[in-house]
Structure formats: C-alpha cells, structure tokens
Length: 229
Image 1: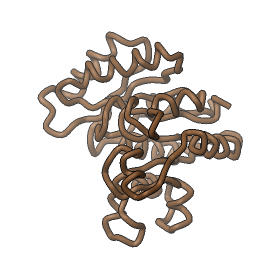
Image 2: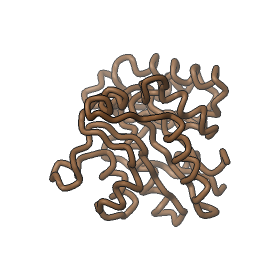
Image 3: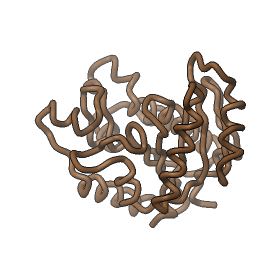
C-alpha cells in the first residue's frame, strides 16, 4: 500500500506545504500523469459559501486539480474542516467536535485503495510534523500509521535549516522513508533560497530542491513523488 501515496509533511507551520503540494499537482497534471491530492484535515477554513473560502488550502488544492469548488469536491478533499486557525484538536474542541486518529487513518487508507493504477495520491498533512492532530496523536503518528513515504517541506526563514534537519532526523529515527526535502521560499527571508537548500543538502542523504514563490516545480522534483514510476 505504501507505493500508492506520498505524505507531504511540514518542518513547521505556515511554511508553504500547500504551495508546494499545489505546484506538484499542477506539474504532474501538465505531464499527463494521474494525480489526486487530498488535505484530509484543515484548520482555519471558512464555510464553502464564504468568498474567503477561495483562499483556503482546500480551495487551492482543488483548483490545482482543475476541480470546481462544490460541497462535494470540498468534502472529498478535506472531510475534517475546522473554522478556527488552531491545531486540529483545539479547533475541533472549539466546535464541540472530536477527531480520532483511527477514523482519519481509515479514511486515508480507503482513498489509497481506491486510487486507480498509475495515479499518484498526495496526502498533505496539517501544521508541522509534530503538531497535534488529535487529543493524543501528532502528525508523525498519523504518517507512521499510514506507512507511506514522506516529502518534507521547509521554509527558507531564519532557523529553517535547523527545523528541517530536526524533522528529517525525526523521520529517520521513526523509520519513515523520506523521498526528499523541498525548501519553499519564505517572504522576507534574510538568506537566499538556494543558500538554505544547499545547507540542508549537505546534511541529508536525500534530494533537496528549492521552489520560489510564484515559481513552478522542476521535473526532477515532480519525479520524487510519482508513484507510477
């Protein structure tokens, strides 16, 4: 089952996971490869009929797939959506709801099993790798339960190198296969994107790519997450 999906994990929060995931989705579509992209858990999401919804992570990923913003498509991409821009466990509690890891994992596995042959399934996580997802579990617990490889996204802000290396070492220590690291350009970063990517590249044993805001992903980067290769 692990060959059917790739989990997009973050070294932190608000660092560009959705930007990278959307760019990869558009790139694989342009190359003619089958791609389905999901963000099962999303916080800070306005109601679908709110004009602000178009700026949400879910809307960005649906648009990257060429899908309309309908209640059905939104629910199929992000079944667990919360209004408050908080960690999912806190956002759920604010709405009087709960989120169980077993339910989340079961839903993802169903989607993985249903993916047509030759289709890459991208599952974008929420927050950083160690961000709480439920009352008792983190993003790392979710990733481990799925037994799929990860693509790690980092920013280029001050401190990003340490955060990326810490996350990569955490994945290695927990036996999670790492396909590569993507450094997404951070606004007003004091150091150039390639400088940060190069520093990380010298210290990990996987490919490291950079992607500028407004840029597109390279073919080499897209190849990292293809599951039909």
